[in-house]
Length: 352
Image (tube, rainbow, N blue to C red; front, top):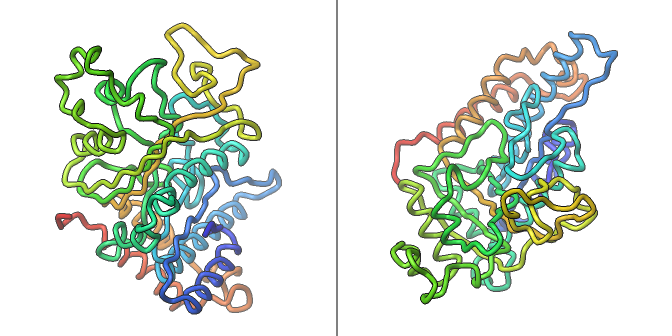
Protein backbone atom coordinates (compact mmCIF):
# COMPACT_ATOMS: atom_id res chain seq x y z
CA UNK A 1 0.00 0.00 0.00
CA UNK A 2 1.49 3.33 -1.10
CA UNK A 3 0.44 6.13 1.18
CA UNK A 4 0.67 9.84 1.71
CA UNK A 5 1.62 10.66 5.29
CA UNK A 6 2.18 14.41 5.61
CA UNK A 7 -1.22 15.80 4.57
CA UNK A 8 -4.85 15.00 5.32
CA UNK A 9 -4.59 12.11 2.86
CA UNK A 10 -2.44 10.41 5.49
CA UNK A 11 -5.55 10.27 7.66
CA UNK A 12 -7.55 8.87 4.75
CA UNK A 13 -4.90 6.19 4.20
CA UNK A 14 -4.94 5.38 7.92
CA UNK A 15 -8.72 4.95 7.81
CA UNK A 16 -8.46 2.64 4.79
CA UNK A 17 -5.73 0.67 6.51
CA UNK A 18 -7.83 0.25 9.65
CA UNK A 19 -10.76 -0.96 7.52
CA UNK A 20 -8.51 -3.48 5.73
CA UNK A 21 -7.22 -4.75 9.05
CA UNK A 22 -10.76 -5.21 10.37
CA UNK A 23 -11.91 -7.02 7.22
CA UNK A 24 -8.77 -9.12 6.65
CA UNK A 25 -7.28 -9.54 10.09
CA UNK A 26 -5.18 -12.55 9.07
CA UNK A 27 -3.64 -10.94 6.00
CA UNK A 28 -0.29 -9.17 5.98
CA UNK A 29 -0.31 -5.49 5.01
CA UNK A 30 2.85 -3.73 3.84
CA UNK A 31 2.70 0.09 3.80
CA UNK A 32 5.09 2.46 2.04
CA UNK A 33 4.59 6.04 3.30
CA UNK A 34 6.08 8.25 0.59
CA UNK A 35 7.52 11.58 1.76
CA UNK A 36 8.43 14.25 -0.82
CA UNK A 37 12.00 15.47 -1.05
CA UNK A 38 10.71 19.03 -1.36
CA UNK A 39 7.86 20.83 0.37
CA UNK A 40 6.67 23.74 -1.80
CA UNK A 41 5.97 27.08 -0.16
CA UNK A 42 4.06 30.06 -1.48
CA UNK A 43 5.86 33.37 -1.88
CA UNK A 44 3.15 35.29 -0.06
CA UNK A 45 3.28 32.96 2.94
CA UNK A 46 4.23 34.78 6.15
CA UNK A 47 6.85 33.44 8.53
CA UNK A 48 4.19 32.59 11.10
CA UNK A 49 2.11 30.73 8.53
CA UNK A 50 5.20 28.86 7.33
CA UNK A 51 5.90 27.69 10.89
CA UNK A 52 2.29 26.52 11.20
CA UNK A 53 2.53 24.61 7.91
CA UNK A 54 5.69 22.89 9.11
CA UNK A 55 4.02 21.97 12.40
CA UNK A 56 0.91 20.60 10.68
CA UNK A 57 3.09 18.49 8.40
CA UNK A 58 5.03 17.09 11.36
CA UNK A 59 1.90 16.23 13.33
CA UNK A 60 0.40 14.50 10.29
CA UNK A 61 3.54 12.39 9.93
CA UNK A 62 3.47 11.41 13.60
CA UNK A 63 -0.23 10.49 13.49
CA UNK A 64 0.24 8.51 10.28
CA UNK A 65 3.25 6.59 11.58
CA UNK A 66 1.34 5.74 14.74
CA UNK A 67 -1.57 4.33 12.72
CA UNK A 68 0.73 2.43 10.38
CA UNK A 69 2.52 0.84 13.32
CA UNK A 70 -0.83 -0.15 14.84
CA UNK A 71 -2.66 -1.58 11.84
CA UNK A 72 -0.02 -2.68 9.32
CA UNK A 73 2.28 -5.68 9.42
CA UNK A 74 5.23 -3.48 8.46
CA UNK A 75 5.78 0.03 7.12
CA UNK A 76 8.73 1.44 5.18
CA UNK A 77 9.06 5.25 4.93
CA UNK A 78 10.47 6.29 1.55
CA UNK A 79 12.12 9.54 0.49
CA UNK A 80 15.11 10.62 -1.56
CA UNK A 81 15.92 13.38 0.96
CA UNK A 82 18.32 12.88 3.83
CA UNK A 83 15.85 14.20 6.39
CA UNK A 84 12.22 15.26 6.58
CA UNK A 85 9.63 16.25 9.22
CA UNK A 86 9.47 20.07 9.38
CA UNK A 87 11.50 20.68 6.24
CA UNK A 88 13.12 18.41 3.68
CA UNK A 89 16.89 18.12 3.76
CA UNK A 90 19.32 17.76 0.85
CA UNK A 91 18.73 14.96 -1.62
CA UNK A 92 20.55 11.65 -1.30
CA UNK A 93 23.68 11.31 -3.39
CA UNK A 94 23.58 8.39 -5.84
CA UNK A 95 26.79 7.65 -7.72
CA UNK A 96 26.43 7.99 -11.50
CA UNK A 97 23.08 9.78 -11.18
CA UNK A 98 22.47 13.48 -11.70
CA UNK A 99 18.87 14.15 -10.72
CA UNK A 100 16.77 17.13 -9.69
CA UNK A 101 15.99 16.58 -6.00
CA UNK A 102 12.89 18.80 -6.12
CA UNK A 103 11.43 17.22 -9.25
CA UNK A 104 8.71 14.62 -8.53
CA UNK A 105 9.38 13.22 -12.02
CA UNK A 106 12.98 12.40 -11.05
CA UNK A 107 12.50 11.34 -7.45
CA UNK A 108 9.45 9.17 -8.14
CA UNK A 109 11.41 7.27 -10.81
CA UNK A 110 14.14 6.50 -8.28
CA UNK A 111 11.66 5.34 -5.63
CA UNK A 112 9.69 3.30 -8.18
CA UNK A 113 12.89 1.48 -9.15
CA UNK A 114 13.53 0.70 -5.49
CA UNK A 115 9.96 -0.53 -4.97
CA UNK A 116 10.09 -2.82 -7.98
CA UNK A 117 13.36 -4.33 -6.81
CA UNK A 118 12.92 -4.70 -3.06
CA UNK A 119 9.51 -6.39 -3.40
CA UNK A 120 10.76 -9.06 -5.80
CA UNK A 121 11.28 -11.71 -3.13
CA UNK A 122 7.60 -12.35 -2.39
CA UNK A 123 6.45 -11.65 -5.98
CA UNK A 124 8.61 -14.16 -7.84
CA UNK A 125 7.07 -17.41 -9.02
CA UNK A 126 10.25 -19.15 -7.96
CA UNK A 127 9.54 -17.97 -4.40
CA UNK A 128 6.12 -19.60 -4.21
CA UNK A 129 6.90 -20.84 -0.70
CA UNK A 130 7.78 -17.33 0.46
CA UNK A 131 5.00 -14.79 0.90
CA UNK A 132 4.49 -11.33 2.34
CA UNK A 133 3.76 -12.71 5.80
CA UNK A 134 7.18 -14.41 5.80
CA UNK A 135 8.86 -11.13 4.87
CA UNK A 136 7.06 -9.31 7.67
CA UNK A 137 7.91 -12.06 10.16
CA UNK A 138 11.61 -11.82 9.27
CA UNK A 139 11.84 -8.04 9.52
CA UNK A 140 9.56 -7.15 12.43
CA UNK A 141 11.08 -9.09 15.30
CA UNK A 142 10.59 -7.59 18.77
CA UNK A 143 7.80 -5.32 17.53
CA UNK A 144 10.04 -3.43 15.10
CA UNK A 145 7.34 -2.59 12.58
CA UNK A 146 9.21 0.33 11.01
CA UNK A 147 11.77 -0.84 8.44
CA UNK A 148 14.35 1.10 6.42
CA UNK A 149 14.95 0.79 2.68
CA UNK A 150 18.08 1.28 0.59
CA UNK A 151 19.06 1.41 -3.07
CA UNK A 152 22.09 1.25 -5.35
CA UNK A 153 21.10 2.77 -8.68
CA UNK A 154 22.75 1.85 -10.91
CA UNK A 155 24.92 -1.05 -9.80
CA UNK A 156 27.49 -0.39 -12.49
CA UNK A 157 30.30 -2.72 -13.51
CA UNK A 158 32.93 -1.93 -16.11
CA UNK A 159 32.61 -3.53 -19.51
CA UNK A 160 34.02 -7.04 -19.27
CA UNK A 161 34.37 -6.87 -15.48
CA UNK A 162 33.19 -9.77 -13.35
CA UNK A 163 31.12 -9.48 -10.21
CA UNK A 164 33.93 -11.03 -8.18
CA UNK A 165 36.40 -8.31 -9.19
CA UNK A 166 33.80 -5.61 -8.64
CA UNK A 167 32.95 -6.65 -5.09
CA UNK A 168 36.59 -7.33 -4.23
CA UNK A 169 37.44 -3.69 -5.07
CA UNK A 170 34.24 -2.16 -3.65
CA UNK A 171 34.71 0.76 -1.27
CA UNK A 172 32.06 2.08 1.13
CA UNK A 173 28.43 1.02 1.67
CA UNK A 174 26.82 -1.16 -0.97
CA UNK A 175 23.56 0.82 -0.99
CA UNK A 176 22.24 4.29 -0.10
CA UNK A 177 19.42 4.73 2.43
CA UNK A 178 16.12 5.98 0.99
CA UNK A 179 14.42 6.29 4.37
CA UNK A 180 14.62 9.85 5.78
CA UNK A 181 16.50 10.64 8.99
CA UNK A 182 18.10 7.20 8.92
CA UNK A 183 21.62 6.07 8.06
CA UNK A 184 21.75 2.30 7.78
CA UNK A 185 24.63 0.72 9.67
CA UNK A 186 26.44 -2.55 9.09
CA UNK A 187 25.94 -4.42 12.35
CA UNK A 188 23.26 -6.28 14.31
CA UNK A 189 20.36 -6.25 11.90
CA UNK A 190 18.07 -8.36 9.75
CA UNK A 191 17.94 -7.55 6.05
CA UNK A 192 16.48 -8.72 2.75
CA UNK A 193 18.52 -7.67 -0.29
CA UNK A 194 17.57 -8.08 -3.95
CA UNK A 195 19.99 -7.85 -6.89
CA UNK A 196 18.73 -7.40 -10.45
CA UNK A 197 20.48 -7.47 -13.79
CA UNK A 198 23.67 -9.45 -13.13
CA UNK A 199 23.77 -12.71 -15.12
CA UNK A 200 25.71 -15.74 -13.96
CA UNK A 201 27.98 -15.37 -17.00
CA UNK A 202 29.51 -12.30 -15.34
CA UNK A 203 30.03 -13.99 -11.99
CA UNK A 204 33.74 -14.84 -12.32
CA UNK A 205 36.40 -15.71 -14.85
CA UNK A 206 36.70 -19.28 -16.14
CA UNK A 207 39.34 -21.45 -14.49
CA UNK A 208 41.82 -21.15 -17.35
CA UNK A 209 41.70 -17.33 -17.17
CA UNK A 210 41.03 -16.85 -13.46
CA UNK A 211 44.60 -16.13 -12.40
CA UNK A 212 44.64 -14.45 -8.97
CA UNK A 213 40.85 -14.75 -8.72
CA UNK A 214 41.24 -18.39 -7.75
CA UNK A 215 42.90 -17.31 -4.51
CA UNK A 216 39.81 -15.39 -3.39
CA UNK A 217 37.34 -17.23 -1.12
CA UNK A 218 34.39 -16.06 -3.23
CA UNK A 219 35.73 -17.85 -6.31
CA UNK A 220 34.11 -21.00 -4.94
CA UNK A 221 30.67 -19.39 -5.34
CA UNK A 222 28.66 -20.72 -8.25
CA UNK A 223 25.78 -18.23 -8.28
CA UNK A 224 25.27 -14.49 -7.91
CA UNK A 225 23.20 -15.18 -4.82
CA UNK A 226 26.00 -17.13 -3.14
CA UNK A 227 28.57 -14.45 -3.92
CA UNK A 228 26.45 -11.60 -2.55
CA UNK A 229 25.60 -13.69 0.48
CA UNK A 230 29.30 -14.19 1.17
CA UNK A 231 30.08 -10.51 0.53
CA UNK A 232 27.41 -9.35 2.98
CA UNK A 233 28.70 -11.77 5.61
CA UNK A 234 32.15 -10.17 5.28
CA UNK A 235 31.03 -6.51 5.47
CA UNK A 236 28.41 -6.82 8.23
CA UNK A 237 28.58 -7.95 11.83
CA UNK A 238 25.99 -10.08 13.65
CA UNK A 239 23.62 -9.65 10.71
CA UNK A 240 21.22 -12.10 9.08
CA UNK A 241 21.05 -11.42 5.34
CA UNK A 242 18.63 -12.95 2.84
CA UNK A 243 19.59 -12.45 -0.81
CA UNK A 244 17.34 -12.67 -3.87
CA UNK A 245 18.66 -12.44 -7.42
CA UNK A 246 16.93 -11.74 -10.73
CA UNK A 247 18.85 -11.98 -14.00
CA UNK A 248 16.67 -9.52 -15.91
CA UNK A 249 17.81 -5.88 -15.56
CA UNK A 250 15.43 -2.95 -15.10
CA UNK A 251 14.21 -1.24 -18.25
CA UNK A 252 14.90 2.50 -18.02
CA UNK A 253 13.82 3.59 -21.48
CA UNK A 254 11.47 6.58 -21.85
CA UNK A 255 9.44 7.75 -20.00
CA UNK A 256 12.11 7.06 -17.37
CA UNK A 257 13.97 10.37 -16.86
CA UNK A 258 17.44 10.73 -18.35
CA UNK A 259 19.28 11.08 -15.06
CA UNK A 260 22.24 8.77 -15.60
CA UNK A 261 25.79 10.04 -15.81
CA UNK A 262 27.46 10.08 -19.23
CA UNK A 263 29.92 7.49 -17.90
CA UNK A 264 27.12 4.89 -17.98
CA UNK A 265 26.69 3.14 -21.32
CA UNK A 266 23.39 2.24 -22.98
CA UNK A 267 23.59 -1.29 -21.53
CA UNK A 268 24.18 -0.02 -17.98
CA UNK A 269 27.92 -0.77 -17.89
CA UNK A 270 30.49 1.76 -16.72
CA UNK A 271 32.37 2.98 -19.79
CA UNK A 272 36.19 2.90 -19.97
CA UNK A 273 38.13 5.78 -18.46
CA UNK A 274 37.91 8.87 -20.65
CA UNK A 275 34.89 7.63 -22.60
CA UNK A 276 31.35 8.95 -22.37
CA UNK A 277 27.94 8.15 -23.79
CA UNK A 278 26.75 10.15 -26.79
CA UNK A 279 24.21 12.87 -25.97
CA UNK A 280 21.60 11.34 -28.26
CA UNK A 281 22.01 7.90 -26.69
CA UNK A 282 19.92 6.98 -23.67
CA UNK A 283 20.57 4.28 -21.10
CA UNK A 284 18.21 1.39 -21.83
CA UNK A 285 18.74 -1.01 -18.94
CA UNK A 286 20.58 -1.07 -15.65
CA UNK A 287 21.44 -3.41 -12.81
CA UNK A 288 20.34 -2.41 -9.35
CA UNK A 289 20.50 -3.49 -5.72
CA UNK A 290 17.82 -2.69 -3.16
CA UNK A 291 17.14 -3.84 0.36
CA UNK A 292 14.90 -3.77 3.42
CA UNK A 293 16.67 -3.44 6.75
CA UNK A 294 15.62 -3.87 10.37
CA UNK A 295 18.36 -1.97 12.20
CA UNK A 296 18.81 0.07 15.36
CA UNK A 297 19.29 3.28 13.34
CA UNK A 298 15.54 3.32 12.66
CA UNK A 299 15.16 4.17 16.33
CA UNK A 300 17.03 7.42 15.64
CA UNK A 301 14.49 8.27 12.93
CA UNK A 302 11.57 7.65 15.28
CA UNK A 303 13.24 9.58 18.08
CA UNK A 304 13.78 12.61 15.84
CA UNK A 305 10.12 12.55 14.79
CA UNK A 306 9.01 12.19 18.40
CA UNK A 307 11.23 15.08 19.49
CA UNK A 308 10.01 17.40 16.73
CA UNK A 309 6.36 16.56 17.40
CA UNK A 310 6.71 16.92 21.18
CA UNK A 311 7.78 20.55 20.72
CA UNK A 312 4.50 21.45 19.02
CA UNK A 313 1.68 22.96 21.06
CA UNK A 314 -1.30 21.24 19.54
CA UNK A 315 -3.95 23.72 20.86
CA UNK A 316 -2.41 26.39 18.62
CA UNK A 317 -3.17 24.37 15.50
CA UNK A 318 -6.84 24.90 14.74
CA UNK A 319 -6.60 22.19 12.06
CA UNK A 320 -6.49 19.60 14.84
CA UNK A 321 -8.93 21.09 17.32
CA UNK A 322 -12.42 19.75 17.94
CA UNK A 323 -13.85 22.26 15.46
CA UNK A 324 -11.34 21.19 12.82
CA UNK A 325 -9.72 17.78 12.84
CA UNK A 326 -11.26 16.58 16.09
CA UNK A 327 -7.96 15.52 17.67
CA UNK A 328 -8.23 15.28 21.45
CA UNK A 329 -5.26 16.26 23.58
CA UNK A 330 -5.23 12.79 25.15
CA UNK A 331 -5.16 11.15 21.70
CA UNK A 332 -2.21 13.32 20.72
CA UNK A 333 -0.32 12.39 23.89
CA UNK A 334 -1.11 8.72 23.30
CA UNK A 335 0.30 9.01 19.78
CA UNK A 336 3.55 10.45 21.17
CA UNK A 337 3.75 7.71 23.80
CA UNK A 338 3.25 5.05 21.13
CA UNK A 339 6.02 6.53 18.98
CA UNK A 340 8.37 6.54 21.94
CA UNK A 341 7.46 2.95 22.79
CA UNK A 342 8.09 1.93 19.18
CA UNK A 343 11.44 3.70 19.29
CA UNK A 344 12.42 1.69 22.39
CA UNK A 345 12.00 -1.54 20.41
CA UNK A 346 15.12 -0.55 18.49
CA UNK A 347 17.41 -0.44 21.50
CA UNK A 348 20.48 -2.40 20.47
CA UNK A 349 20.66 -4.60 23.56
CA UNK A 350 20.07 -8.03 22.11
CA UNK A 351 21.68 -10.43 19.65
CA UNK A 352 19.79 -11.59 16.56
